[in-house]
Image (cartoon, rainbow, N blue to C red; front, side, top):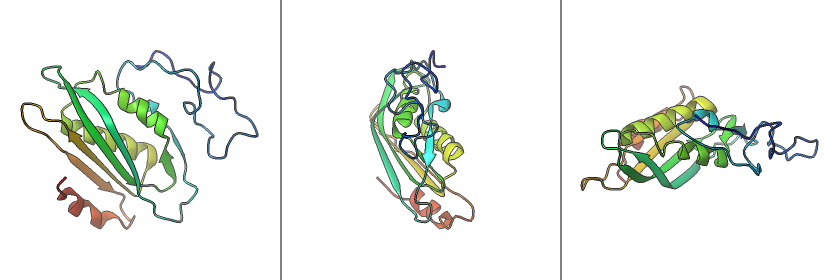
Length: 171
């Protein structure tokens, strides 16, 4: 759990105003001068903003090359890169909130496959995208590199046919 969170009305939070940039409504972390203390996994850190181009399918790719978590058995650190690709519908993830959310895995013990599934499920719950894929490119541990991939498409989105072929892509 976090000790503190910068939010509306918190010291350091950007004050809402009529001149606030469009699409910034509801964002509490972007532009805040205070940094929240992150003590553990917390999907509530994720924030979203509206997609101004719902009429177009856009593939958003987020590369997170400094991802860390702990082995759930040994407690040893695991290092890797997460690649998140999604086609938004109404919402996009705010990148600073994603960074802080991913930091929340640093002291949590999860298998690599679990990490990718958890991240996909949390982002799917937040964004309700048309399509989403999370690829974990974890550094070797015990001489074996693990690269789990999780893919999902919303029923009726037109992206369902992409799920199975994406699972078979080798990286």
